[in-house]
Image 1 (cartoon, rainbow, N blue to C red):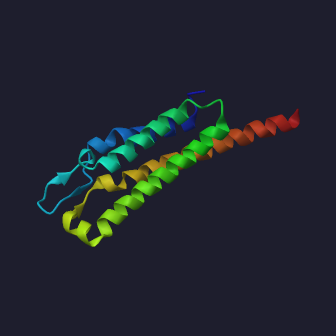
Image 2: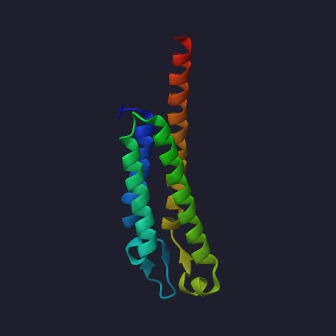
Image 3: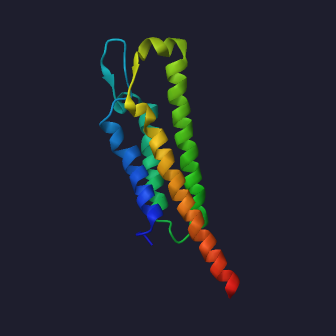
Length: 136
């Protein structure tokens, strides 16, 4: 059912990963120009992949186990994206290009929070169904 709380969490995670990234900058370069996600193809692909995966997971409500696994895969993808951002900011040549970090680098953290909340709600539903089956 689409009206469950985990669907709302997954939709918020999809909005964060798919829409919010175009409005906030990732960082500012040494010239003071804001660098957006459109300028970094790898980050754009990973953000859009996370958004698509969140949207696909919403409609797998009949298969809660697969929904839970895809939520974990999406969390891992966002951790990987966060690791890429940390790597880019801490490498010596990258530090010369990234002079000031933007709020866009913390978008994967927001997405991870909502994905963890969604997985927690999916697990709660699965436990409820198992407990009802036990009484039969």
